[in-house]
Image (tube, rainbow, N blue to C red):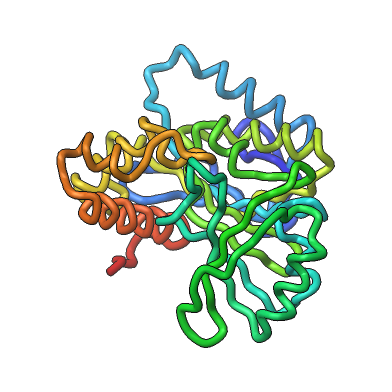
Length: 279
């Protein structure tokens, strides 16, 4: 997988390349689609960043969509066993910092088959069907084994936030926010060291979250910045919703609503041209 810049030509498999210098702060600019990292691309993205370090430019944050595939990424064996299953992250739940349990929204035509897959999955230690939200959909909590390859800590180390995650067959598609495109190198390094197949599907570039709204209200932006600074999005979390609410001097339900709607706005802006307005 390759990170696209104006200074080098990536190995593009699909999509088109738009030089990042043409990006504006008013709307996202898709810089590359369906691109794979190479050793040359990592060196190019790093050298580009260093060569412009002395110029008076604002750091731009990005929303990236990344596809990863490896048999030991958590729940891969399970979705292979139950091919009707669809796994999505529950952004408002995250990880319980005291128990290390991860929550996901599961769609399946047969939950008994899905749970048979969980029992055979070497990445899952314990699981619980927390609640069935409707026919064919339920919330599950999981504990991971030491054999599991967990992507969320790598993204947190890169100062990123997972906006969404779901499976695409046996592969996993992550939508992430990062403060700068060079932070994606952390994910690339992890993939290379662990033989994880990785592909960059899309990148949208904005001015820094602190300098532009990207469709966010002032309250949503403040809540997201506080949550990032306090470690609310890390896995496991370093702060609770109560901590974030206390910092903002609002109630927990109000803080939860701001974070949920803010994350939805970021997801919408990363997957569209920014013209769609979330509820």
